[in-house]
Length: 231
Ligand SMILES: [Mg+2]
Ligand SMILES: [Zn+2]
Image (cartoon, rainbow, N blue to C red; front, side, top):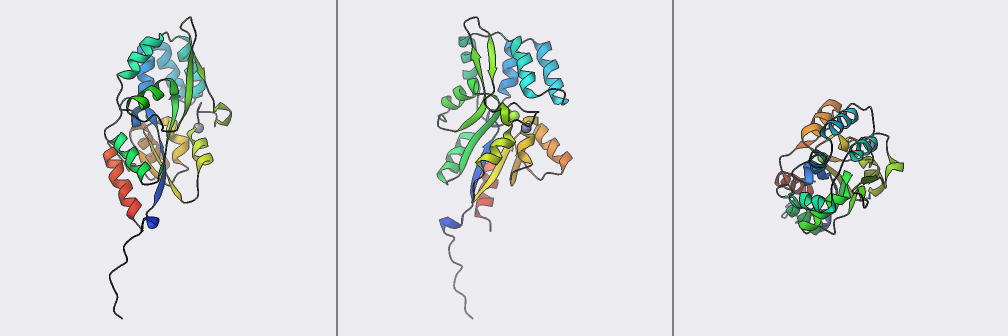
């Protein structure tokens, strides 16, 4: 039997994604949180707290409490520090492209909205949904952490990304996670597609979790567009 040309793929057949993106060292070029504590905290206290967290001895909430107890910064200093930060190459373009294609994009961070919001605003991404910890600064210059999602924590994270992946899951959307570090561990075990680098790639290797390695968001965009059009 004679077969006509294959029907063109309609829009409804293209895949749609629900993308969760880490901030520090992923969406942002640098680990802004780490830089923040290197700049404004006591380096020795900070290093010990981070090591204890990496070793699984304390939660990230406790790590932040220890670091913030010895952190001093004015509002102006924080603003100046934050405004000097950049997003990763291709990040804004990927977010715009995915939103146009009907994907959902979220920023999930175990860092602090206090600096993340400012950086997203600077790059025109003020409308991007963000789930993160936050900071308060009192008149004496004392910074204190605020953990809005701590009650949903796995015990290791202050803001457990696995919780957001579970609660936002939606029929018909493929869940994608993009990250670079240990704070991303709880999310990558629960999504369909993982993009990983640095410590997160090592973790995925150890646990046998399949992932795409990436350098920047241009790499991610081209892979996502291939998947979007795949059967
Ligand atoms: Mg990170
Ligand atoms: Zn967790």
